[in-house]
Image 1 (tube, rainbow, N blue to C red):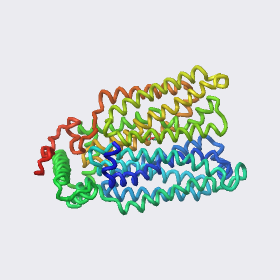
Image 2 (image 1 turned 90 degrees about the horizontal axis):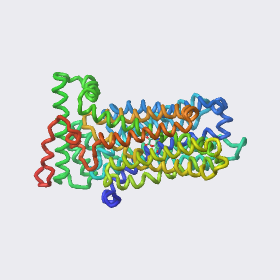
Image 3 (image 1 turned 60 degrees about the vertical axis):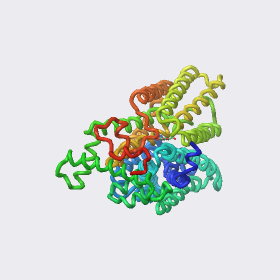
Length: 504
Ligand code: BGC
Protein backbone atom coordinates (compact mmCIF):
# COMPACT_ATOMS: atom_id res chain seq x y z
CA UNK A 1 0.00 0.00 0.00
CA UNK A 2 0.81 3.67 0.29
CA UNK A 3 3.01 3.16 3.39
CA UNK A 4 5.08 0.52 1.62
CA UNK A 5 5.69 2.85 -1.34
CA UNK A 6 6.69 5.72 0.93
CA UNK A 7 9.22 3.52 2.67
CA UNK A 8 10.98 3.06 -0.70
CA UNK A 9 11.32 6.69 -1.87
CA UNK A 10 14.23 6.05 -4.22
CA UNK A 11 12.57 3.36 -6.31
CA UNK A 12 9.27 5.24 -6.11
CA UNK A 13 11.07 8.26 -7.57
CA UNK A 14 12.53 6.08 -10.34
CA UNK A 15 9.09 4.70 -11.16
CA UNK A 16 7.57 8.21 -11.23
CA UNK A 17 10.34 9.30 -13.55
CA UNK A 18 9.99 6.29 -15.85
CA UNK A 19 6.25 6.89 -16.01
CA UNK A 20 7.04 9.90 -18.24
CA UNK A 21 7.31 7.22 -20.95
CA UNK A 22 3.72 6.18 -20.14
CA UNK A 23 2.72 9.84 -20.18
CA UNK A 24 4.13 10.19 -23.70
CA UNK A 25 2.11 7.30 -25.02
CA UNK A 26 -1.09 8.49 -23.39
CA UNK A 27 -0.45 11.99 -24.72
CA UNK A 28 0.15 10.66 -28.24
CA UNK A 29 -3.05 8.63 -28.17
CA UNK A 30 -5.11 11.55 -26.93
CA UNK A 31 -3.66 14.67 -28.52
CA UNK A 32 -4.63 13.84 -32.07
CA UNK A 33 -8.36 13.62 -31.27
CA UNK A 34 -8.45 17.38 -30.50
CA UNK A 35 -5.98 18.36 -33.22
CA UNK A 36 -8.04 16.88 -36.07
CA UNK A 37 -11.07 18.92 -35.03
CA UNK A 38 -9.18 22.25 -35.19
CA UNK A 39 -10.05 24.66 -38.04
CA UNK A 40 -6.39 25.61 -38.51
CA UNK A 41 -5.45 21.94 -38.96
CA UNK A 42 -8.26 21.53 -41.52
CA UNK A 43 -6.97 24.63 -43.35
CA UNK A 44 -3.36 23.38 -43.39
CA UNK A 45 -4.26 19.79 -44.36
CA UNK A 46 -7.59 19.99 -46.22
CA UNK A 47 -7.46 16.50 -47.74
CA UNK A 48 -6.78 14.97 -44.34
CA UNK A 49 -9.56 16.90 -42.64
CA UNK A 50 -12.16 15.94 -45.21
CA UNK A 51 -11.37 12.25 -45.54
CA UNK A 52 -12.46 10.04 -42.60
CA UNK A 53 -10.53 7.05 -43.97
CA UNK A 54 -7.29 9.02 -44.01
CA UNK A 55 -8.05 10.29 -40.50
CA UNK A 56 -8.61 6.71 -39.34
CA UNK A 57 -5.25 5.73 -40.79
CA UNK A 58 -3.56 8.71 -39.17
CA UNK A 59 -4.93 7.71 -35.76
CA UNK A 60 -4.11 4.04 -36.18
CA UNK A 61 -0.66 4.43 -37.79
CA UNK A 62 0.60 5.18 -34.30
CA UNK A 63 -0.60 1.86 -32.90
CA UNK A 64 0.72 -0.13 -35.86
CA UNK A 65 4.20 1.34 -35.68
CA UNK A 66 4.11 0.97 -31.88
CA UNK A 67 3.70 -2.79 -32.43
CA UNK A 68 6.83 -2.71 -34.62
CA UNK A 69 8.72 -0.58 -32.05
CA UNK A 70 7.85 -2.98 -29.29
CA UNK A 71 8.97 -6.04 -31.30
CA UNK A 72 12.25 -4.39 -32.23
CA UNK A 73 12.96 -3.34 -28.68
CA UNK A 74 12.90 -6.89 -27.29
CA UNK A 75 16.38 -7.75 -28.59
CA UNK A 76 17.55 -4.13 -28.27
CA UNK A 77 16.77 -4.00 -24.57
CA UNK A 78 18.90 -7.13 -24.12
CA UNK A 79 21.72 -5.81 -26.27
CA UNK A 80 21.90 -2.14 -25.26
CA UNK A 81 20.52 -2.51 -21.70
CA UNK A 82 17.10 -1.47 -20.45
CA UNK A 83 18.49 1.94 -19.55
CA UNK A 84 19.98 2.84 -22.94
CA UNK A 85 17.04 1.44 -24.86
CA UNK A 86 14.90 3.80 -22.80
CA UNK A 87 17.19 6.65 -23.90
CA UNK A 88 16.89 5.48 -27.52
CA UNK A 89 13.09 5.45 -27.16
CA UNK A 90 13.22 9.03 -25.84
CA UNK A 91 15.41 10.17 -28.77
CA UNK A 92 13.09 8.56 -31.34
CA UNK A 93 10.16 10.13 -29.51
CA UNK A 94 11.73 13.61 -29.74
CA UNK A 95 12.34 13.18 -33.47
CA UNK A 96 8.69 12.10 -33.93
CA UNK A 97 7.48 15.16 -32.05
CA UNK A 98 9.69 17.54 -34.04
CA UNK A 99 8.56 16.11 -37.40
CA UNK A 100 4.86 16.38 -36.42
CA UNK A 101 5.23 19.89 -35.04
CA UNK A 102 7.07 21.15 -38.12
CA UNK A 103 4.79 19.33 -40.59
CA UNK A 104 4.02 21.26 -43.76
CA UNK A 105 2.42 18.41 -45.65
CA UNK A 106 0.50 15.23 -45.01
CA UNK A 107 3.52 12.99 -45.54
CA UNK A 108 5.28 14.71 -42.64
CA UNK A 109 2.26 14.21 -40.36
CA UNK A 110 2.15 10.51 -41.20
CA UNK A 111 5.92 10.12 -40.88
CA UNK A 112 5.87 11.96 -37.52
CA UNK A 113 3.06 9.74 -36.24
CA UNK A 114 4.90 6.62 -37.39
CA UNK A 115 8.15 7.69 -35.70
CA UNK A 116 6.32 8.66 -32.50
CA UNK A 117 4.56 5.28 -32.67
CA UNK A 118 7.89 3.44 -32.87
CA UNK A 119 9.04 5.26 -29.76
CA UNK A 120 5.94 4.56 -27.71
CA UNK A 121 6.12 0.89 -28.67
CA UNK A 122 9.72 0.85 -27.43
CA UNK A 123 8.97 2.76 -24.25
CA UNK A 124 5.78 0.89 -23.35
CA UNK A 125 7.72 -2.35 -23.60
CA UNK A 126 10.93 -1.40 -21.80
CA UNK A 127 9.49 0.61 -18.91
CA UNK A 128 7.43 -2.20 -17.31
CA UNK A 129 10.35 -4.55 -17.95
CA UNK A 130 12.84 -2.19 -16.31
CA UNK A 131 10.62 -1.41 -13.33
CA UNK A 132 9.74 -5.06 -12.70
CA UNK A 133 13.45 -5.93 -12.70
CA UNK A 134 14.24 -3.21 -10.17
CA UNK A 135 11.26 -3.63 -7.88
CA UNK A 136 11.16 -5.69 -4.71
CA UNK A 137 8.50 -8.42 -5.05
CA UNK A 138 6.11 -6.81 -2.56
CA UNK A 139 5.97 -3.50 -4.52
CA UNK A 140 6.32 -4.75 -8.08
CA UNK A 141 2.64 -4.41 -8.99
CA UNK A 142 2.43 -0.83 -7.72
CA UNK A 143 5.64 0.29 -9.35
CA UNK A 144 4.88 -1.21 -12.77
CA UNK A 145 1.40 0.31 -12.57
CA UNK A 146 3.07 3.74 -12.57
CA UNK A 147 3.35 3.33 -16.35
CA UNK A 148 -0.46 3.22 -16.62
CA UNK A 149 -0.79 6.17 -14.22
CA UNK A 150 1.53 8.06 -16.58
CA UNK A 151 -0.48 6.95 -19.65
CA UNK A 152 -3.81 8.03 -18.20
CA UNK A 153 -2.27 11.34 -17.06
CA UNK A 154 -1.04 11.80 -20.65
CA UNK A 155 -4.49 11.13 -22.15
CA UNK A 156 -6.05 13.56 -19.66
CA UNK A 157 -3.42 16.28 -20.13
CA UNK A 158 -3.65 16.06 -23.93
CA UNK A 159 -7.35 16.86 -23.84
CA UNK A 160 -6.98 19.90 -21.62
CA UNK A 161 -3.96 21.14 -23.57
CA UNK A 162 -5.86 20.78 -26.87
CA UNK A 163 -8.76 22.57 -25.25
CA UNK A 164 -6.58 25.44 -24.01
CA UNK A 165 -4.75 25.70 -27.36
CA UNK A 166 -8.00 26.10 -29.33
CA UNK A 167 -7.94 29.86 -28.93
CA UNK A 168 -4.28 30.59 -29.54
CA UNK A 169 -4.17 33.74 -31.69
CA UNK A 170 -7.76 33.68 -32.83
CA UNK A 171 -10.52 31.15 -33.17
CA UNK A 172 -12.66 29.61 -35.91
CA UNK A 173 -11.36 30.33 -39.40
CA UNK A 174 -8.86 32.85 -38.04
CA UNK A 175 -7.22 30.28 -35.77
CA UNK A 176 -3.44 30.24 -36.00
CA UNK A 177 -1.52 27.08 -36.94
CA UNK A 178 0.04 27.37 -33.51
CA UNK A 179 -3.22 25.97 -32.11
CA UNK A 180 -2.27 22.49 -33.37
CA UNK A 181 1.50 22.93 -33.41
CA UNK A 182 1.81 23.90 -29.72
CA UNK A 183 0.14 20.74 -28.31
CA UNK A 184 2.33 18.61 -30.59
CA UNK A 185 5.44 20.56 -29.64
CA UNK A 186 4.87 20.23 -25.89
CA UNK A 187 5.49 16.52 -26.28
CA UNK A 188 9.14 17.30 -27.11
CA UNK A 189 9.61 18.67 -23.60
CA UNK A 190 8.55 15.40 -21.95
CA UNK A 191 10.71 13.31 -24.33
CA UNK A 192 13.76 15.47 -23.62
CA UNK A 193 13.31 15.22 -19.85
CA UNK A 194 13.01 11.42 -20.15
CA UNK A 195 16.11 11.22 -22.37
CA UNK A 196 18.27 13.40 -20.12
CA UNK A 197 17.11 11.61 -16.99
CA UNK A 198 18.21 8.26 -18.45
CA UNK A 199 21.81 9.30 -17.72
CA UNK A 200 21.03 9.17 -13.98
CA UNK A 201 19.10 5.91 -13.98
CA UNK A 202 20.71 2.79 -12.51
CA UNK A 203 21.14 -0.25 -14.73
CA UNK A 204 18.70 -3.07 -14.14
CA UNK A 205 20.49 -5.53 -11.82
CA UNK A 206 18.90 -8.43 -13.68
CA UNK A 207 20.21 -7.14 -17.01
CA UNK A 208 23.69 -6.73 -15.48
CA UNK A 209 23.60 -10.36 -14.37
CA UNK A 210 22.45 -11.38 -17.83
CA UNK A 211 25.60 -9.80 -19.22
CA UNK A 212 27.88 -11.39 -16.59
CA UNK A 213 28.40 -8.29 -14.45
CA UNK A 214 27.71 -9.66 -11.01
CA UNK A 215 29.54 -6.95 -9.04
CA UNK A 216 27.66 -4.27 -10.95
CA UNK A 217 24.39 -6.08 -10.27
CA UNK A 218 25.07 -6.21 -6.53
CA UNK A 219 26.02 -2.51 -6.56
CA UNK A 220 22.87 -1.60 -8.48
CA UNK A 221 20.68 -3.64 -6.11
CA UNK A 222 22.35 -2.03 -3.10
CA UNK A 223 21.65 1.43 -4.59
CA UNK A 224 18.02 0.65 -5.35
CA UNK A 225 17.28 -1.21 -2.10
CA UNK A 226 19.34 1.29 -0.04
CA UNK A 227 21.24 -1.49 1.73
CA UNK A 228 24.91 -2.35 1.98
CA UNK A 229 26.17 -4.47 -0.85
CA UNK A 230 27.20 -7.02 1.81
CA UNK A 231 23.73 -7.22 3.31
CA UNK A 232 22.55 -10.85 3.20
CA UNK A 233 19.35 -9.83 1.41
CA UNK A 234 21.31 -8.31 -1.46
CA UNK A 235 23.57 -11.36 -1.58
CA UNK A 236 20.54 -13.63 -1.57
CA UNK A 237 18.88 -11.78 -4.44
CA UNK A 238 22.08 -11.92 -6.49
CA UNK A 239 22.36 -15.65 -5.77
CA UNK A 240 18.78 -16.22 -6.88
CA UNK A 241 19.26 -14.35 -10.15
CA UNK A 242 22.54 -16.21 -10.74
CA UNK A 243 20.86 -19.58 -10.16
CA UNK A 244 17.98 -18.68 -12.43
CA UNK A 245 20.33 -17.62 -15.21
CA UNK A 246 22.42 -20.73 -14.77
CA UNK A 247 19.32 -22.88 -15.20
CA UNK A 248 18.38 -20.92 -18.31
CA UNK A 249 21.90 -21.35 -19.71
CA UNK A 250 21.99 -25.09 -18.92
CA UNK A 251 18.62 -25.65 -20.49
CA UNK A 252 19.59 -23.80 -23.65
CA UNK A 253 22.88 -25.72 -23.86
CA UNK A 254 21.04 -29.03 -23.43
CA UNK A 255 18.49 -28.18 -26.09
CA UNK A 256 20.95 -26.75 -28.58
CA UNK A 257 24.19 -28.61 -27.91
CA UNK A 258 27.25 -27.12 -29.52
CA UNK A 259 25.51 -23.92 -30.62
CA UNK A 260 27.64 -20.98 -29.56
CA UNK A 261 26.93 -18.48 -32.32
CA UNK A 262 25.07 -15.52 -30.84
CA UNK A 263 22.64 -15.04 -33.76
CA UNK A 264 21.69 -18.75 -33.63
CA UNK A 265 21.18 -18.64 -29.86
CA UNK A 266 19.07 -15.53 -30.31
CA UNK A 267 16.77 -17.31 -32.78
CA UNK A 268 16.78 -20.39 -30.52
CA UNK A 269 15.44 -18.32 -27.61
CA UNK A 270 12.48 -17.13 -29.67
CA UNK A 271 11.88 -20.70 -30.86
CA UNK A 272 12.01 -21.90 -27.26
CA UNK A 273 9.27 -19.47 -26.23
CA UNK A 274 6.94 -21.30 -28.57
CA UNK A 275 8.31 -24.83 -28.38
CA UNK A 276 8.89 -25.30 -24.66
CA UNK A 277 5.64 -26.08 -22.88
CA UNK A 278 6.18 -24.01 -19.75
CA UNK A 279 7.13 -20.89 -21.75
CA UNK A 280 4.37 -21.40 -24.28
CA UNK A 281 1.81 -21.32 -21.46
CA UNK A 282 3.23 -18.09 -20.06
CA UNK A 283 3.51 -16.51 -23.49
CA UNK A 284 -0.12 -17.38 -24.09
CA UNK A 285 -1.13 -15.76 -20.79
CA UNK A 286 0.89 -12.61 -21.53
CA UNK A 287 -0.42 -12.22 -25.10
CA UNK A 288 -4.01 -13.31 -24.53
CA UNK A 289 -4.28 -10.85 -21.66
CA UNK A 290 -3.35 -8.10 -24.12
CA UNK A 291 -5.85 -9.35 -26.71
CA UNK A 292 -8.63 -9.38 -24.12
CA UNK A 293 -7.54 -6.04 -22.68
CA UNK A 294 -8.18 -4.54 -26.11
CA UNK A 295 -11.35 -6.57 -26.77
CA UNK A 296 -12.93 -5.13 -23.62
CA UNK A 297 -13.45 -2.18 -25.99
CA UNK A 298 -11.48 0.47 -24.10
CA UNK A 299 -10.13 2.18 -27.17
CA UNK A 300 -13.50 2.03 -28.89
CA UNK A 301 -14.83 4.04 -25.94
CA UNK A 302 -11.83 6.34 -25.63
CA UNK A 303 -11.52 7.12 -29.36
CA UNK A 304 -15.22 7.14 -30.18
CA UNK A 305 -16.73 8.52 -26.96
CA UNK A 306 -17.65 11.79 -28.75
CA UNK A 307 -19.75 9.86 -31.32
CA UNK A 308 -21.40 7.82 -28.55
CA UNK A 309 -22.25 10.95 -26.56
CA UNK A 310 -23.46 12.74 -29.67
CA UNK A 311 -25.77 9.84 -30.54
CA UNK A 312 -27.38 10.14 -27.10
CA UNK A 313 -28.44 13.72 -27.77
CA UNK A 314 -25.66 15.69 -26.06
CA UNK A 315 -24.38 18.45 -28.26
CA UNK A 316 -21.77 21.15 -28.80
CA UNK A 317 -19.02 21.86 -26.34
CA UNK A 318 -20.51 19.60 -23.71
CA UNK A 319 -19.83 16.54 -25.89
CA UNK A 320 -16.12 17.03 -25.95
CA UNK A 321 -15.99 18.06 -22.31
CA UNK A 322 -18.03 15.12 -21.08
CA UNK A 323 -16.73 12.57 -23.51
CA UNK A 324 -13.07 13.32 -23.61
CA UNK A 325 -12.54 15.55 -20.57
CA UNK A 326 -14.48 13.62 -17.96
CA UNK A 327 -13.57 10.22 -19.45
CA UNK A 328 -9.92 11.28 -19.17
CA UNK A 329 -10.25 12.39 -15.56
CA UNK A 330 -12.14 9.21 -14.53
CA UNK A 331 -9.58 7.07 -16.35
CA UNK A 332 -6.73 8.74 -14.47
CA UNK A 333 -8.32 8.80 -11.01
CA UNK A 334 -9.38 5.14 -11.14
CA UNK A 335 -5.79 3.95 -11.66
CA UNK A 336 -4.62 5.52 -8.37
CA UNK A 337 -6.13 2.98 -5.92
CA UNK A 338 -4.65 0.13 -7.98
CA UNK A 339 -1.27 1.82 -8.00
CA UNK A 340 -1.45 2.02 -4.20
CA UNK A 341 -2.95 -1.36 -3.38
CA UNK A 342 -2.37 -3.83 -6.24
CA UNK A 343 0.25 -5.67 -4.19
CA UNK A 344 -2.21 -6.08 -1.36
CA UNK A 345 -5.31 -6.96 -3.40
CA UNK A 346 -3.60 -9.32 -5.87
CA UNK A 347 -3.81 -9.40 -9.68
CA UNK A 348 -6.62 -11.94 -9.99
CA UNK A 349 -9.25 -10.28 -7.76
CA UNK A 350 -8.59 -6.93 -9.44
CA UNK A 351 -9.00 -8.40 -12.93
CA UNK A 352 -12.10 -10.38 -11.96
CA UNK A 353 -13.78 -7.39 -10.31
CA UNK A 354 -12.93 -5.11 -13.24
CA UNK A 355 -14.10 -7.62 -15.87
CA UNK A 356 -17.43 -8.05 -14.01
CA UNK A 357 -17.96 -4.27 -13.83
CA UNK A 358 -17.04 -3.80 -17.49
CA UNK A 359 -19.34 -6.56 -18.75
CA UNK A 360 -22.31 -5.23 -16.76
CA UNK A 361 -21.63 -1.67 -17.97
CA UNK A 362 -21.48 -2.80 -21.60
CA UNK A 363 -24.73 -4.75 -21.17
CA UNK A 364 -26.47 -1.70 -19.71
CA UNK A 365 -25.08 0.61 -22.41
CA UNK A 366 -26.11 -1.81 -25.17
CA UNK A 367 -29.61 -2.14 -23.74
CA UNK A 368 -30.06 1.63 -23.33
CA UNK A 369 -28.86 2.06 -26.88
CA UNK A 370 -31.23 -0.60 -28.20
CA UNK A 371 -34.26 0.85 -26.39
CA UNK A 372 -33.67 4.57 -26.95
CA UNK A 373 -31.72 4.65 -30.21
CA UNK A 374 -34.52 6.50 -32.01
CA UNK A 375 -35.76 8.62 -29.11
CA UNK A 376 -32.82 10.02 -27.17
CA UNK A 377 -34.17 13.56 -27.62
CA UNK A 378 -37.33 12.73 -25.66
CA UNK A 379 -35.46 10.80 -22.95
CA UNK A 380 -32.76 13.05 -21.55
CA UNK A 381 -32.45 10.86 -18.43
CA UNK A 382 -31.55 7.86 -20.60
CA UNK A 383 -28.78 9.96 -22.22
CA UNK A 384 -27.35 10.76 -18.80
CA UNK A 385 -27.63 7.14 -17.72
CA UNK A 386 -25.66 6.22 -20.84
CA UNK A 387 -22.98 8.79 -20.00
CA UNK A 388 -22.79 7.50 -16.42
CA UNK A 389 -22.25 3.92 -17.57
CA UNK A 390 -19.55 5.04 -19.98
CA UNK A 391 -17.73 6.54 -16.97
CA UNK A 392 -18.36 3.46 -14.81
CA UNK A 393 -17.03 1.27 -17.61
CA UNK A 394 -13.90 3.42 -17.99
CA UNK A 395 -13.29 3.34 -14.22
CA UNK A 396 -13.64 -0.47 -14.18
CA UNK A 397 -11.15 -0.81 -17.05
CA UNK A 398 -8.73 1.69 -15.55
CA UNK A 399 -8.38 0.01 -12.15
CA UNK A 400 -8.18 -3.52 -13.56
CA UNK A 401 -7.10 -4.55 -17.06
CA UNK A 402 -5.55 -1.14 -17.74
CA UNK A 403 -3.03 -1.64 -14.93
CA UNK A 404 -2.63 -5.39 -14.63
CA UNK A 405 -2.17 -5.73 -18.41
CA UNK A 406 1.32 -4.21 -18.02
CA UNK A 407 2.24 -5.97 -14.80
CA UNK A 408 1.73 -9.68 -15.56
CA UNK A 409 3.77 -9.93 -18.81
CA UNK A 410 6.72 -8.13 -17.25
CA UNK A 411 7.00 -10.40 -14.22
CA UNK A 412 6.34 -13.99 -15.28
CA UNK A 413 9.27 -14.88 -17.55
CA UNK A 414 12.76 -16.12 -16.67
CA UNK A 415 15.66 -13.76 -17.42
CA UNK A 416 17.01 -15.15 -20.69
CA UNK A 417 13.71 -14.82 -22.55
CA UNK A 418 12.04 -12.04 -20.52
CA UNK A 419 12.73 -9.08 -22.79
CA UNK A 420 11.75 -10.97 -25.94
CA UNK A 421 8.56 -12.31 -24.42
CA UNK A 422 7.51 -8.91 -23.05
CA UNK A 423 8.10 -7.34 -26.44
CA UNK A 424 5.87 -9.96 -28.11
CA UNK A 425 3.10 -9.36 -25.55
CA UNK A 426 3.18 -5.57 -25.81
CA UNK A 427 3.33 -5.75 -29.61
CA UNK A 428 0.17 -7.89 -29.45
CA UNK A 429 -1.52 -5.17 -27.41
CA UNK A 430 -0.61 -2.47 -29.92
CA UNK A 431 -1.61 -4.61 -32.87
CA UNK A 432 -5.06 -5.23 -31.42
CA UNK A 433 -5.38 -1.58 -30.49
CA UNK A 434 -4.75 -0.84 -34.18
CA UNK A 435 -7.40 -3.35 -35.28
CA UNK A 436 -9.97 -1.96 -32.82
CA UNK A 437 -9.32 1.61 -33.99
CA UNK A 438 -10.00 0.54 -37.57
CA UNK A 439 -13.06 -1.64 -37.05
CA UNK A 440 -14.92 0.30 -34.34
CA UNK A 441 -16.56 2.87 -36.67
CA UNK A 442 -17.76 0.03 -38.90
CA UNK A 443 -18.99 -1.95 -35.89
CA UNK A 444 -20.83 1.01 -34.38
CA UNK A 445 -22.42 1.61 -37.75
CA UNK A 446 -23.48 -1.93 -38.56
CA UNK A 447 -23.95 -3.61 -35.17
CA UNK A 448 -25.06 -0.47 -33.25
CA UNK A 449 -26.04 -1.66 -29.76
CA UNK A 450 -24.68 -5.10 -30.70
CA UNK A 451 -21.17 -3.60 -30.50
CA UNK A 452 -21.61 -3.16 -26.73
CA UNK A 453 -22.83 -6.76 -26.36
CA UNK A 454 -19.86 -7.90 -28.41
CA UNK A 455 -17.42 -6.19 -26.02
CA UNK A 456 -19.41 -7.42 -23.01
CA UNK A 457 -18.94 -11.01 -24.19
CA UNK A 458 -15.17 -10.54 -24.21
CA UNK A 459 -15.25 -9.05 -20.70
CA UNK A 460 -16.97 -12.27 -19.59
CA UNK A 461 -14.31 -14.32 -21.38
CA UNK A 462 -11.68 -12.31 -19.47
CA UNK A 463 -13.41 -13.00 -16.16
CA UNK A 464 -13.78 -16.75 -16.73
CA UNK A 465 -10.31 -17.17 -18.16
CA UNK A 466 -8.61 -15.33 -15.30
CA UNK A 467 -10.65 -17.27 -12.75
CA UNK A 468 -9.69 -20.68 -14.15
CA UNK A 469 -6.34 -20.22 -15.81
CA UNK A 470 -4.31 -17.25 -14.56
CA UNK A 471 -2.30 -17.91 -11.39
CA UNK A 472 -1.78 -15.21 -8.75
CA UNK A 473 1.65 -13.60 -9.03
CA UNK A 474 1.30 -11.09 -6.21
CA UNK A 475 4.37 -11.11 -3.95
CA UNK A 476 6.08 -13.98 -5.83
CA UNK A 477 9.73 -13.24 -6.52
CA UNK A 478 10.58 -13.23 -10.22
CA UNK A 479 13.06 -16.05 -9.76
CA UNK A 480 10.29 -18.19 -8.24
CA UNK A 481 7.82 -17.86 -11.12
CA UNK A 482 8.88 -21.25 -12.51
CA UNK A 483 7.46 -22.97 -9.46
CA UNK A 484 4.24 -20.99 -9.77
CA UNK A 485 3.79 -21.97 -13.37
CA UNK A 486 4.67 -25.58 -12.52
CA UNK A 487 7.68 -25.48 -14.78
CA UNK A 488 9.66 -28.59 -15.38
CA UNK A 489 12.80 -26.85 -14.15
CA UNK A 490 14.24 -27.54 -10.74
CA UNK A 491 13.88 -24.69 -8.30
CA UNK A 492 16.98 -22.57 -7.94
CA UNK A 493 19.00 -23.93 -5.04
CA UNK A 494 19.20 -20.56 -3.39
CA UNK A 495 15.46 -20.31 -2.81
CA UNK A 496 16.11 -22.57 0.17
CA UNK A 497 18.11 -19.73 1.65
CA UNK A 498 15.16 -17.39 1.75
CA UNK A 499 14.27 -18.10 5.35
CA UNK A 500 16.46 -15.31 6.55
CA UNK A 501 19.22 -17.25 8.22
CA UNK A 502 21.74 -14.75 7.00
CA UNK A 503 23.84 -17.54 5.57
CA UNK A 504 23.33 -16.71 1.92
C1 BGC B 1 -4.15 0.34 -23.02
C2 BGC B 1 -4.39 1.36 -24.09
C3 BGC B 1 -5.51 2.28 -23.64
C4 BGC B 1 -5.18 2.89 -22.30
C5 BGC B 1 -6.32 3.70 -21.78
C6 BGC B 1 -3.84 1.03 -21.72
O1 BGC B 1 -3.64 0.08 -20.71
O2 BGC B 1 -3.05 -0.50 -23.41
O3 BGC B 1 -4.71 0.71 -25.29
O4 BGC B 1 -5.70 3.30 -24.59
O5 BGC B 1 -4.91 1.87 -21.36
O6 BGC B 1 -6.05 4.23 -20.53
